[in-house]
Image 1 (cartoon, one colour):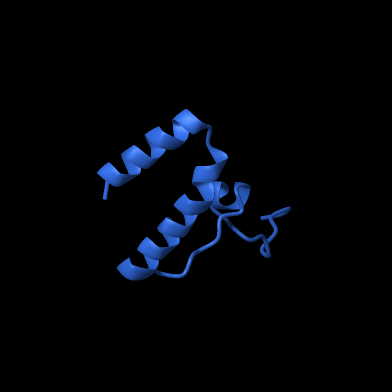
Image 2 (image 1 turned 135 degrees about the horizontal axis):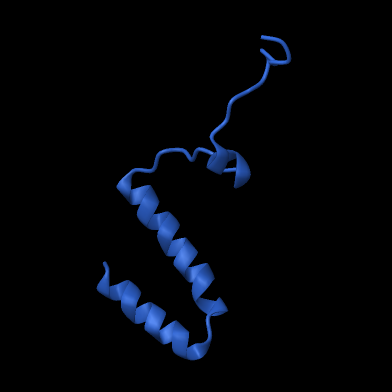
Length: 62
């Protein structure tokens, strides 16, 4: 075929578009520690009323 680049790299559109990267696997203990740290960093960025609702909903899902 003329005009076809044999060296072209095929990628998954969504992975390429959002520049997604594979993450190392977590065991349960590592995952819980990561999420707790994320929650601790996220909570202060919410408004007062949203903070309380967020904390309440997080505790219910544990």
